[in-house]
Length: 493
Ligand SMILES: Nc1ncnc2c1ncn2[C@@H]1O[C@H](COP(=O)(O)OP(=O)(O)O)[C@@H](O)[C@H]1O
Ligand SMILES: [Mg+2]
Image 1 (cartoon, rainbow, N blue to C red):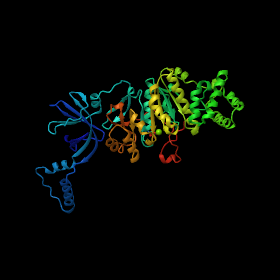
Image 2 (image 1 turned 90 degrees about the vertical axis):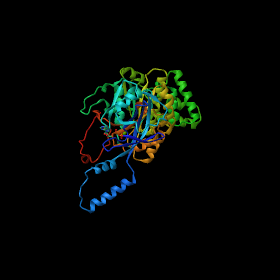
Image 3 (image 1 turned 30 degrees about the vertical axis):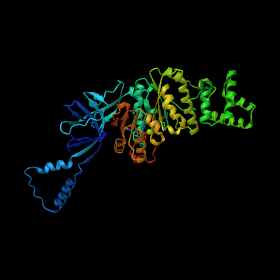
Image 4 (image 1 turned 180 degrees about the horizontal axis):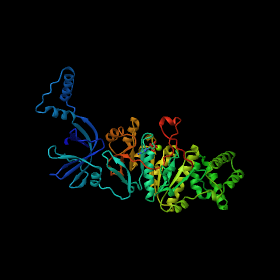
């Protein structure tokens, strides 16, 4: 390969037909005399666009079809001309430049067209040049040249991650792969599960439990996940009343007075709350507002006066000493109960983290725009992250996540998108150049993803995600199952 052109961050390379390089692969451009190295990544490829070549092709095609051929080519000129026709131009982006093995930020080096050598760089060579920190390996799959690829769990610690891509491309699969590896390393994970698909994390396809099976708990808010009022506390309750039940200010003030009264009497129970509201001397409109919220609280079934019926997060963390996965199943909940549950769980978790009663947690949220209120997004990436909630958003609607969240994301796992508007959203918001994202993401086959960010030292990598032996649940139910040629699997709780 030879360097032909460099302008700005772009390098144009000329490659022979037998030099197989696909989009996303890396090339090392070296100049031994100057002790300089440049790492570039292919983002697009094309043929040489010489008008003479096209003329030749057209002429030959016509001749081939119109007359009997007499082959006589003693100097094998044809072979060379064929090679020229198939030569490729590789459009590349500069990813880093090394001066005597030290990474330099100065991108002004112009490699010589004569003395520099350009060779393909494997992923292992790439990351031995750009050293990645960490030793808790999470194998994710293989690269296009068949090399095994892994990330380090440390690069997810304290970070904000986004997994996005079209429906059915393998986002949840990747999330499950990451979760099960984090759990193996003893991390604590909370999953907001919309499709009841994460329950299978602890089981193999043949129905046998795997190594993390005893670290997994599954909760359904209102059924197996209930809290006492005492445990929830006033501030979490105010959050719920304000943000999901939209209580007016005057009524909220009365609610707080009632709550404080019951607390001072040591009788903070649902049943007493109802009684006191009934007897409370206040304006009828306020009383109505209080009652309607009280009934919403009761009907969510999230609260109970019976301590045996309820849980405390800190007890769960004590029980799972070696890490654990808490799956919150949101699939069967009404939108309001869903929002209340999420509000309550998040505010309680942050409260416990602030008091240093629980260790930091990794939060995996599928389609978070369906249950996360607007003001929570910024809170998650700033305050909550500070206290130790490290979120991974998983979505097939990239525009449901605000640009400012993308910009703060440390790691981005992008699966295929063909829709131009979606591609535009992602490429506008990510720190990687939009040429790379647009030209590569469109071409990604299912189960293949492009990884950007800290886990890859800001060197975008394309991998095909590996299959797992995990039990897959939550798949769409089809009517014509025989058409898909699949056996019907039945899983009972
Ligand atoms: N890398 C992979 N290897 C094997 N099966 C996969 C892989 N990625 C996804 N799948 C399967 O493809 C289907 C769709 O994947 P899923 O992760 O649910 O997609 P998404 O969440 O993007 O809609 C699932 O049945 C899943 O088990
Ligand atoms: Mg999914």
